[in-house]
Length: 209
Image (cartoon, rainbow, N blue to C red; front, side, top):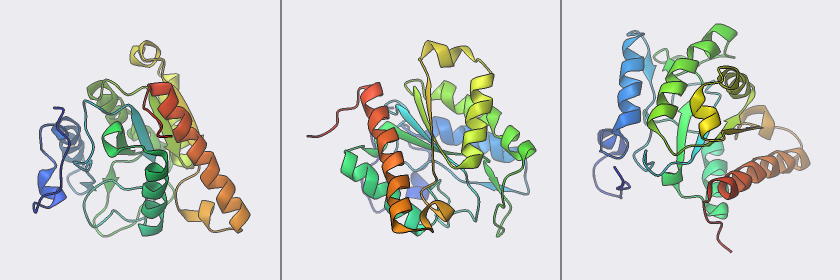
């Protein structure tokens, strides 16, 4: 499962069961089956189960992306996320994106996630972490992600201390964090940049000079 998805004419959605990403997307299939009236978003095949070292946990309020894949948020949020990762030299195979609350009601936005919804995301998150065995850092984006990260740490699951697991709490790539004054937006983006830069150093991902 070490091959990374390459650009082909096959839509990304149709490649979500390629060997290097299928294990996490099978978990999402099983998660979807728990709530048949809801949909789930899948992990893009540009990511890689065997190479991933960092988890990006998103507070997935709003509507599901039309691609059916997990994203950092709306188009502006995705642009910020891609730009920051490119500047840092953080390749997608080293990251696994994940949603706090895996489910979406068809054609309806998720509002602010309530505590029971956040708690319901803990088991799928733990299942994913067990499969993506090289991850040892989680960057939690937004309030809901911060709360799920706290629940994760409270489990004292052995995989956390075995891996020396580290959690960073930062702003989301979109929403209110980037709706204020330019200076504040810059400070929020720098906070996120520092978290990923530190995550790369912590997990041994080379930072280009």
